[in-house]
Length: 257
Image (cartoon, rainbow, N blue to C red; front, side, top):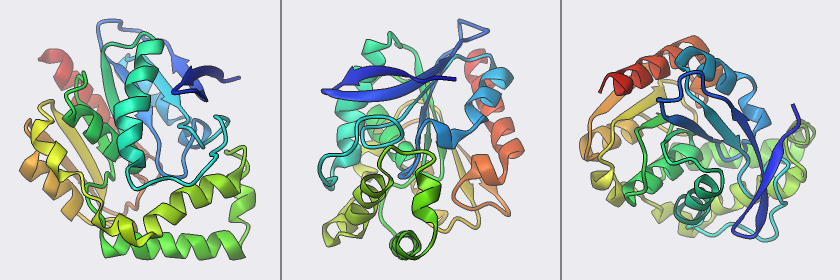
């Protein structure tokens, strides 16, 4: 399917929509990981749409996928800018006033900042989100840099991104920058008053259970934690059936509310 494009904050962004079969339900807004895009989600958004009846929006952030190529390195607050500037304008331009963000990794952090700033959301479904930086995160991101420079990882990323080198280093350089070690979004959590589903793999190479435990302890609304065995940083790929079932239950519970 050919993507559509919309201009947000002066940047051309790639997106894809899936129609709802139950218009009363919220629109699931998929927010990808640090090296993600529309295409890296594969068929998971389609499966979630079919299982829940929700409409779906999937997009590639600036610097990712077929969206405009990153012109300069990310700053420490790049996820804040995505949550507070890009995402609200994107939803407004596409006429989405009932979002339920589904965020993976960086996308989960963006979803928390967005909701914590009191932007409208029906709930949040978070897959391996980050709320602070851990040693395991930095160590794995350093290993990713080595893989990018010594393996065929650039060729693999080229299947999903217009400029894989700029996409990779835009993400990798800022996470490895000394200033990023103090990045922390826990201050947003008390103002996240909507229901949260937080899914974390027990074998996540980029973060520990401390991330979702912090969300459960500090969020201003109800939090459901799902801890998945034999699951790394991508629950929708490592444990797709369990992840799909959890999101379906979560959306169903919101519909009954």
